[in-house]
Length: 259
Image (cartoon, rainbow, N blue to C red; front, side, top):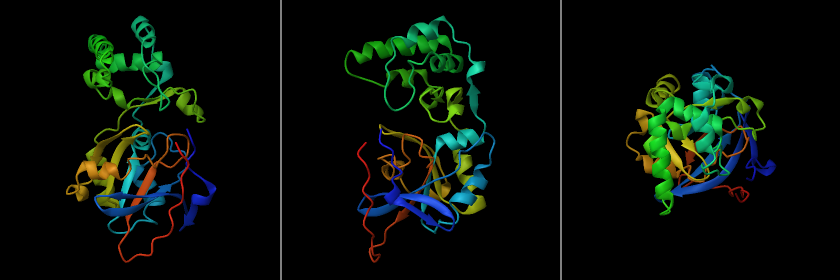
C-alpha cells in the first residue's frame, strides 16, 4: 500500500496542514480535494471541536466535508477493548477458513470474529459462514457480511500491523446515529458533511447532513471513490471537497502514487 501524503502535495493555510489529492470529475463537474491532517483522535473527543479546528478555517459555502467513520466512532467512544473479548471455540475454528485481504483485518482474526459472534449471535454467524462458503464456490463474495448484519462489516481494529499501538488492542464499531452527527455539525458550524466508510475497494454512506439531501448518495460517494483519505496511517480522516468553477484558473493536479 502506497502512502498518499507526499511532500510535494503538502500545503498549509490558516494554520491547517492538508495534502492535495488529484482532482476528480463527477457528472461533468470537477472538484479538488484537500486531505486534512489532524492529530491522532483520542476516545471521547468532541467531533464538533475537531471540525471547528481543522475544517472551518478552510471551509467555504458550497464545500462538502467527507468524514471517516473511524474518528466519529473514537469520539463517541464506540469501541471494544481486546481484553473484553474472550475468544471461544467457534471463533478459533471458523477463522481458519475465513478470507484475508490487504485492506484491513478480516474475519481470519479470531478476536474480530469473536466480536462478530458477540454482536450478531452464534447462530447467525454460523449461517453466514455456511452461506459464504457455498456462494464463494460460484465466485460470489460479501455474503457473510450481508447475512451477519449488525454492523459486522464496519468493525475495524485489532490490527497488529498498525503503527498506532492503540489499534492493536482496540476495535472500532460503526458510529451511532450518523445522520444526527452530520446535522449537528451543520447546525453548529454550517459545514455540509457526509459520514462514510471508505477503503481502496469500496465506499459506504452512513449518513449526510440534510443540506446535502438533494445530492444522490452515489454522486457523493463518487467524490471519494479513490479513497483520498488513504488506507495507511496518513492521519487524514477529513476530506474537504471543493467545486472548481469554470472561470477558475485550475492549478495542476498533484500526481498521486499508484496504489
